[in-house]
Length: 185
Image 1 (cartoon, rainbow, N blue to C red):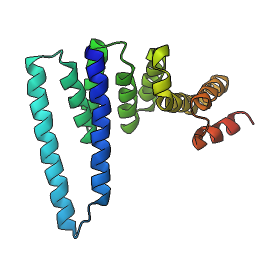
Image 2: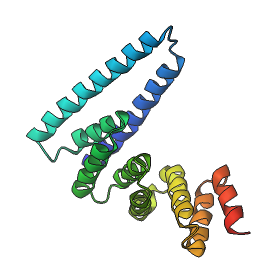
Image 3: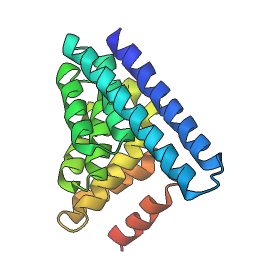
């Protein structure tokens, strides 16, 4: 039951985040002052959200829904260290929930920690259950691409295997196609 609600939450948060991006891209700004005001408002809202979620988690440290919301709020605030730490807490509570590893990898990658991003993508790939593959094809394709890209210098044979898997899940990914050509030439 928890997993279903967390998956729904995660998808909902992605949708809400997408709507925010659309709003941000389509809202005209007349001056630098408006941009500054918008950024300050977003920061205040984010901090209030984060503070509220922290209090909720203090009351119930195993509230995975609140933890997922907090990790997402940290990501939206580009607070990668806290996002990573929060996703790790979720992984401890729900070790077989693959999206937490994918989100960790994303946060590590955003923090420019490529070694840990690769490890988290590998954990994500290993955690996706066979019945979840179809709904996770795009994420699996990207995870395999990232792993192949990271291994291209140190382990080209393994990189070839990973890029082939990436293209199996998303044969239209132009970056994966280019890397495959480089690895197989």
